Length: 410
Image 1: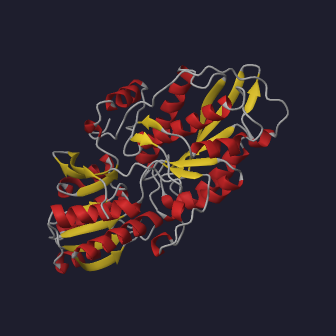
Image 2: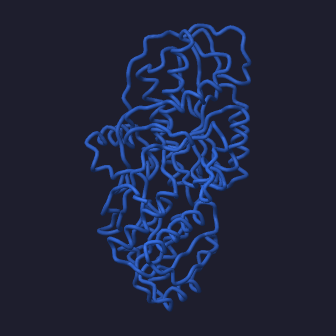
Image 3: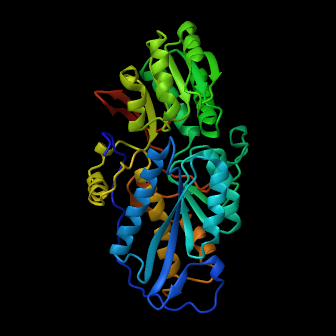
């Protein structure tokens, strides 16, 4: 496991009392299959399973796999066998959209966990929504996915009723980081950098707005191409800017080298980012120069939850080669929100899946409420998690260490 593991607690498992029976005539292209031994329900997983962000993607896949195995072992929904179908999107929107179509075509699929990237989430939403296939992301943080493109202009409108997420949004995360830096760390001058992607640019924008609102100064802004890995020109600008902190909107593959190069250019100031850099991989990529850097992440640190040992122990017992990383707990809870919804639909239909199972499951997810790995799991009217907890972590002593937890007050 990585030195820092996410929030964890095993979802409360109540034994069901219903038995599935044959469903009769139905549209097999839109629902899980049934046979003499019961029904098979597939939970799809879309995440980057290869490439630079695979550490996070594999943690997502493994955590969903654990949830499915536990549900089956406990026969949580009598007569239903859950399976996963994990697809690699390589953090590319086009691949995510193709994967969404593949999952829609799987007649057994009643839910999808993923993706990691907000830009990929955008590409998948309509495909899944048109098929009434519910999607629960453990990691998308762009506010527009649930509240529309004009979410920051006073008009919030949910684009797709089938889309939910267990992680809080950048509308909360960016300002939370700004408040910590200005009020607690006493940083007054920031250089803001982003990778121009949906997640990074959005996060940087919400941070910048709150930092300036608090009275801080944004000395300069810059965009980088995360694929180049040569950020020397930006590092030189940071050095001459007089900034006492750098805020980066983006992910760890670029953030680690960026931090290293800024320090080597002579700017001995911390780089701060969001959950996209909160990974053990960032510690490796930034090296000794990254010590003192900060990251915010959704949820509370694992050590604050007495019940967290269950998830950690079960994950380790499962023999997964990769750590569950930043989104493991959120992925586990996302899978359980779908499992809970399937259970509710089956119980409400005389112990069998209805002919419109996909639509019914999507509707049921909106009403789920249970104690999960990340705390209370439930969703508001936009499909956003009601859990707004966040934590600031500092890179020190070879690991991420929690320095402050709380919620954004704004």
